[in-house]
Length: 116
Image 1 (tube, rainbow, N blue to C red):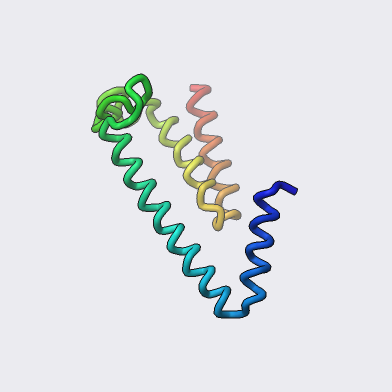
Image 2 (image 1 turned 60 degrees about the horizontal axis):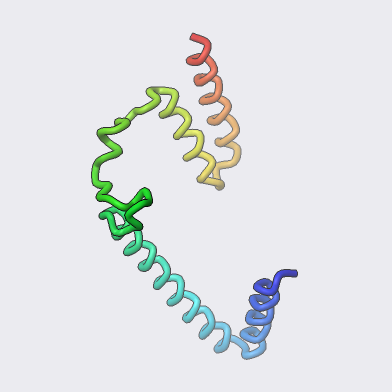
């Protein structure tokens, strides 16, 4: 068992030993930490998109609308749009019965397009 799992389990057990008040306090601070991390990710994304990354990396210059001009909005045509829909459908894990039929349908369309 990794050390971080043991720490998390022991933290949860200790918070549970203090009853409802201890659990509520732990929930409050965990929520504050989550909010802080989300805000940090937003700021990091804005900094990287505006060219604040390492100068030799992908985010070394201003990104802006560069990807809309090169390679363009539909770089791989209709096949690329279908492939994106398959990937996006699998990110919504709650629609499992729909995912199988939708992905099979889009996969058949992609196969038809490749054969023609």
